[in-house]
Amino acid sequence: MDTTVLIDHLRDAPAAQRLEDLLQRGDLAATTPINIEEVVRGLRVSEEQTAATLIEALIVIPLGAKEAWRAGAWRRDHAARGVTLSQADCLIAAAAAESEAVLATGNPKHFPMTGVEVEHWPAGH
Image 1 (cartoon, helix red, strand yellow):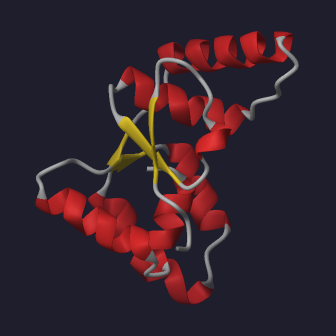
Image 2: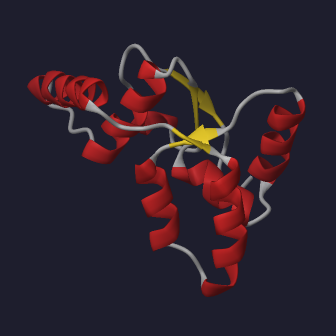
């Protein structure tokens, strides 16, 4: 799950119900250390405990050499075509791709990379 989905869950937007549905189907919910940092950075003080509970319930996909290599290759290849991708988004996408996970995000345009399955969860709707 990308940061947009996690924040929507914390703020009881539609992602909260989608996440509950996903878990009831027996699917696993995961995120990356990058997404955790992004969530914590934007937390309201009143959300800290709820966020901690959410993060503890998620699988945290580790980032290693394979993910870093894939992220760097995507950034290089897209830059050669005049497209700038963020380091964070490339690492998040690489973690999903290497884990064969679907990346749920409110910002699918941030993830044009090949080899990663992206599912659009509209943010705040």
